[in-house]
Image (cartoon, rainbow, N blue to C red; front, side, top):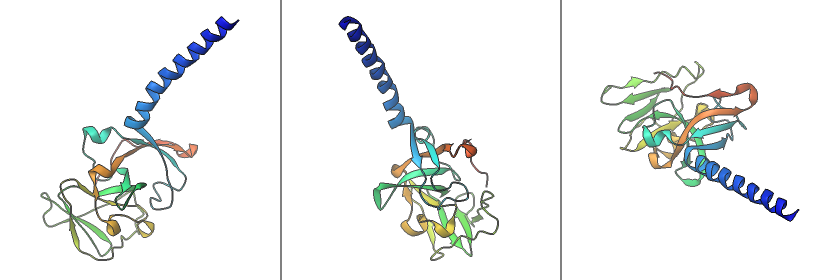
Length: 186
């Protein structure tokens, strides 16, 4: 009787150890759950949605304009934010008259960013219309709900070291399940 119990216990311990050996690296190095708090990303993402963040892509490729990312808040790294990448390293970004202008080597005179994923009547507010030049590892991020978002307009650019990963999958609510593997075209 005791022998069967110990055999069962040993098998249970082995299964638990193997499961942890698989789950822990996946959770800490490949994907991470994220729970949306607030309205800063509406209409794309809403409060209390459950997302899966891809943490490995940015170890292999650079983040792209239009991708939605999760990052540690630069002024309090214990806090996590979700925003959309607007400006890339070594570019300049200017918000003027409700429009976003991107200045880079291909567009030295500036390119007005077209954001088809946002409502047509949305104007982007900025406390000033200064041009912000990004460093080699810096990104300019904005929430999709520009009137209710604390983002790079207020706390400045986000260094790549603060980026956790990109939004890959929405798992809740169930009627909005979606995989995000394409980037909006501008």
